[in-house]
Image (cartoon, rainbow, N blue to C red; front, side, top):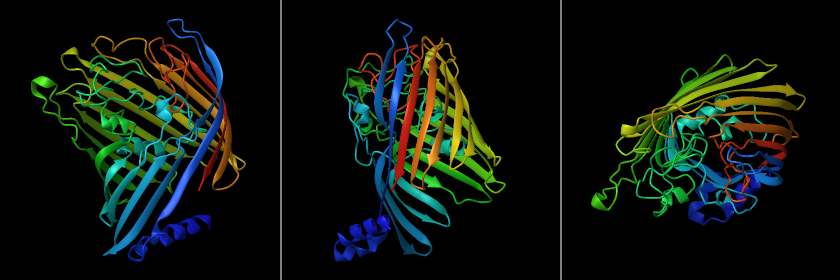
Length: 410
């Protein structure tokens, strides 16, 4: 009822010729937690620290709408924005308008075609297996797809051009002494880890045939450069595609994705990734699993290969569920200097969430990441670590968290 009133209020604020937008809907998610953080001593001897933190878990506010344009076709739009809900000295907590999934498109019996900023087919596969996490302290926000936790800008003439093994830069890249790319400042622009949404992009999603669906996305080469002697000439772009299938009354689901990132880590080379995720709902328990491998090309220096995998489970108990997960990032492999080494990590979590209603959930849990001496994995959205400045812990510092969270949808 309240959402309908919001819709009417939006429509009432429009001029008479625009009354056709009456299907506009305001929606959102407020997700907060109170955490007790424990950062362990780093490999270089940086002291451990324990502290409390109030965190926002991808809280957001959005506006979306649909219009029937005839012939079985629908025009639609969505504009979704981060609502950080808390402030600190961490610039990653700031909000930018339309910083989340935001696009405009056409949909019909032939499929769904849209342009804007959206999660990739690669990232969409997390929905098939990500059932074992309370709040967001699990594999998907720490280990899986997260080898480049700091992101990377494929425009070699800009700063922020780094990828990393859990926050530690891979070989190559331009030192951050040059101007920052606007696309990076836009919180989801070009050049980023495999898990992140892409902007400047075109997406197609096929109809579902017998439980199967195909998704394809292309990030255009907006940052193509012809710098000549003044800089680096590059032509960065990205392709992401997936095939998924759900059957047996929805109890079984599986999907595979493949990504190609051109001129990301090295100009003239391609980074590639392959992943498989899936799950089976037994009724008394829902189980999911994921495996992925990414290969970063460093040209004459060779390639760096990253492998991650994880399992998750949810066991219904009353109006809630016990949720648990384990994931692991293996050490990077490859001949390049700085690639091979003791830079993997292990992560596990357990908790219980209770659904008071369709809109409100309260949970409690524990999670930990055991970083190898050369790794800096952590969960997205946390505040500063040991040194009070960097949100990524120093290499080798283990991270432990005990939390209580509240989630409300409207």
